Length: 265
Ligand SMILES: [Zn+2]
Image 1 (cartoon, rainbow, N blue to C red):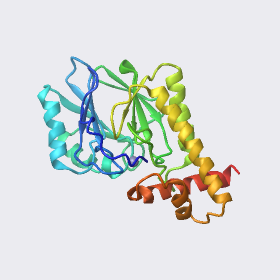
Image 2 (tube, protein in one colour):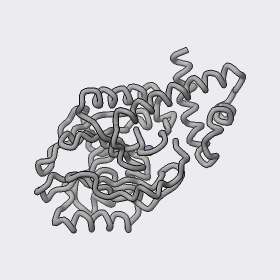
Image 3 (cartoon, helix red, strand yellow):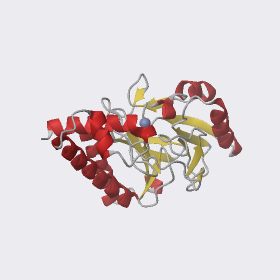
Image 4 (cartoon, protein in one colour):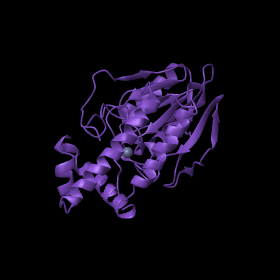
């Protein structure tokens, strides 16, 4: 959760020879500058992988297809980082427009397998399950760029929400440790998030996320010990520093933390 508002410095664009972000015009306290739709292609290849076509916004989809066509390419595969509407609502429509298969975890789409290597026009994409924000959250490594496409698991600014009850803090912490291990091994040095700017230092950001989670958990533990009886009461104490517009999401994160504390007293 972030509440920091839009960052005029982030408007999408090319982040490497292989990756370009087309920013969807759906900014909000929860989506930051908007949803990042990522276009991935090996230089010299005419096949593009699109990650998260976004909400059902015809103008955005047309813009994405314009970007693909302007480089003489076509969409060969669409991937979803998770099923939230701001990432995936347009998946069926995008499939109609492109004919390209849509792959994700669950929800009637082709299931992606942990560790699976996808190859599209010479581009390699590795599947790393990162449940926690939602149970179906998955990230993608682009080994040639040492970047990880994180969806809503790690954002480009601020922190994210554990969308309880589908999301789980235990799973989320395991996912952060999985990403930390990738940064330690050197396979991932940067993050290409689902919202907010490209992250140049993946390791530092994951360390910040883990520390933030531990701090929040201690704050929730203290609030409960101090007599807070409901998730809302905990939010009023612990999330006083974030705008009220994101309190409903904070309440879900608090529910996830209360569940975690019940299981790990
Ligand atoms: Zn989400």
